[in-house]
Image (cartoon, rainbow, N blue to C red; front, side, top):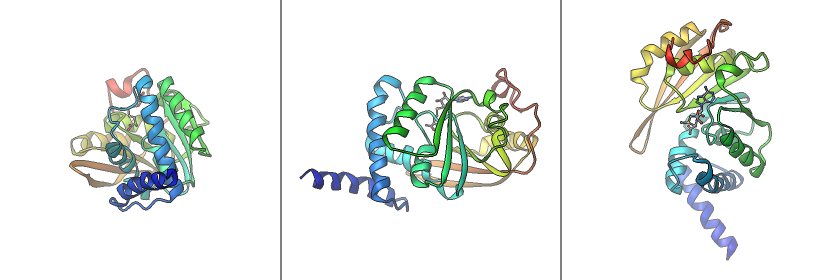
Amino acid sequence: MVKFLLLCYNFFMKNAFYKFNLQLTDEQINKFNRYYELLVEYNERFNLTAIVDKNEVIIKHFVDSLLGAKFFNKGKLIDIGSGAGFPAIPLKIFNDNLEVTLVEATGKKCTFLEAVIKELDLKNIKVVNDRAEILGKNENFREQFDYCSARAVARLNTLAEYCMPFVKVGGYFIPYKGDVVEELADGKRAVKILGGKIEKVEEFSLEEAKRSIVLVKKIEKTLNIYPRGNGKERKKPL
Ligand code: SAM
């Protein structure tokens, strides 16, 4: 009976992903189910997400995080402003070849991220409780990553200054956005100053919502004056 219920529980999740052309193994489905349980369990104390309905979490957090999965191959990924882990934890569950660093400014969110890593038995993934604009000056992190992702953290021009310093020349900054059109002109200018070039903007519709993923290639090193710090990235964006 327990086995039957577990099968139904997993079938529901598997089917939800399948509708978006995402085929997951039973092991991956088990991890997503456990991730959902932890999210709901910690949410009361840690205020992690406004979305708790299971179907909504699957679509708006899990599937949304995986919309960009095809852009990440083997390599080192740093995720800025991870919050409850989106998009990097779903990307790691989906593609175990990624070596992941989660950067989050709020300590209690980091406690949650550590709990998820332990419970899901994820390897080659760590959490850094710091601000991007401080960590971006640290030579152990600066220009060390193949990919830098971020979702729902800041406008594209501000976000580029947080993220571009982490990316190696030849690597990619991959912001997850809603409708990005209005941010693109400012964003393009900031990206260029920071040594990057927007290669493409891929648009998706997720039920009623318009989603965009921007592919920014790093073509030259970022000048050492960036990120400027002291809140300038937000107050006076490039
Ligand atoms: N990326 C997650 C998501 O899509 O659900 C979380 C989004 S939440 C709206 C933004 C998160 O970014 C917060 O957890 C906040 O603490 C973190 N954050 C904002 N600015 C940051 C910075 N400069 N460095 C590190 N984390 C930052």
